[in-house]
Length: 386
Image (cartoon, rainbow, N blue to C red; front, side, top):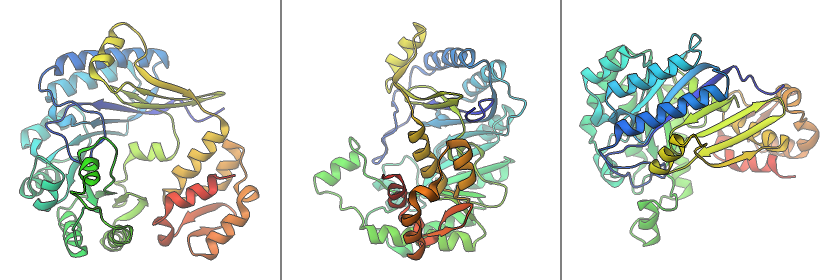
């Protein structure tokens, strides 16, 4: 038997944005029409998915994008009502919606609470207007601070904000100021992401043309270290490489990803992962709203690809996901569920990493040290390679 398929997470991709951020490679459209047509197609896919997987029990729901906060609350309620009707939601622990500061009003927050949203993830990215202009964000720093104030006082069980580090020409002092402002909002969860240059983004083109010089690896590493130092000193637990939370405010939805639990995704470009008995599959929906809708209405799977995974694929994923968390790799779990004895296969590499101060190694676990967190991907690769 594989992972527990009876308690899963549901990701709902809302593909609408007001404008394109310079670094973003997620699928989105900037049209201001077609919301209802999309919602109808989405709900039809939700019906098809629920029937295909025998109306499983949901533990979390996550509205991501795109910008879910562009949808009116009535549309969000319609989608949620559809989910509650088709899935078992008695054990639902968390309903999250991503939102941008410019969409936050007291009225909108009140409506979100009324329809059952329990958590808001706010895309602040920076409290510095220079950074926001560079990233082509729609809001300014004052709007970000005001949105945080409104969410903090609205009555949600939890909320989070995102910050991006590694923005060109940002000093450690400016990054520290960003972190300090985030802490002062009272937010119980902060996610920090390094700016990455993805192909086909405006930022990539700017870098290729020499108009933007990206930050050095050492400077990015210094900013990451500063985030760890400041946030942990302020009482946030570094429970995942990119995530800091006060006790009890960890993201339940994202934690299911990192635990390698089953999840289903609906909407264009959404990903899914399913492991039950000998069935181990992953798939992605097409990254095209029109094609997605056409496939749904013709009762065809809206997949851009669907692949069967091997047990070796699973072992690699489990190592990668577990290393990102503060719990690290549970060696007994890796052996019992995945049939892989890491100490037998990688003892020399593990001992070398331990002697270099990159990991903490025991008979039952492998955890990254602070030094190791700076090169998490490299350590993962070393444990993957044969």
